[in-house]
Amino acid sequence: MDRTGLLIILSSPSGAGKSTLARRLMDWDPSLRFSVSATTRPPRPGEVDGQHYYFTTAGAFHQMVEQGQMLEHAEVFGNLYGSPSAPVEAAMRDGRDTLFDVDWQGGQQIRASALGGHVVSIFVLPPSLPELERRLRARGQDSEAVIASRMAKSRAEISHWAEYDYVLINDDLDRTEQNLRAILTAERLRRDRQGGLGRFVKNLMEEHA
Image 1 (cartoon, rainbow, N blue to C red):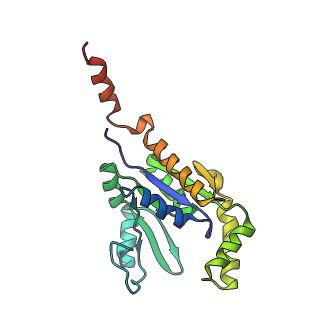
Image 2: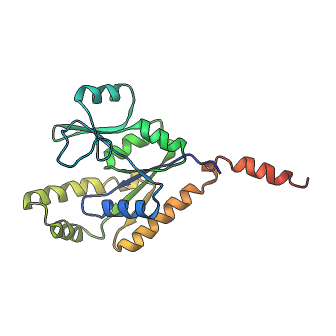
Image 3: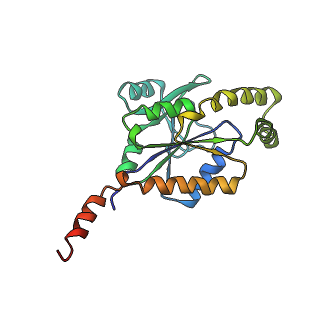
């Protein structure tokens, strides 16, 4: 049956497992499209335009924002980042879902966009703040100052949990992944998202009439 693709927003404080869950979800369903952001920062070694980011100029970026071609955008450390709408709209027409790894601010902008009616938003919570800090330290990537900053930001992120359609507590990665799969499956099967359902039922009722 015909189905319009969904916009799946996945948010969490840093260290709660969002990126790992996103990778697992895409391994489970290869038809999922991961939203590639546009940015004004220069490419890093090994980064490919259109695969890791859409690299663009500040002028072109601002023009896209003014023309309503960005679902969400923000400035981070002096560089601009945003989610172009054209690839998402193309995926929707093909019945493919797009996965967004964004914070609560990006989620708010996407929900307020023209495509907001197709959004399914999921927030991932850590089992506790001490466990969140332990996970950040276990990565071995950040200094004490950066960890402290991430923990402070985490509290601000968590305060927006009630804005989301679904909230999952990631105390067991496998179970949380199963719950994510269940959410996506149920949302795809909603009556109002199955475009050809009415036609199917009409034909069904006319059989042997």
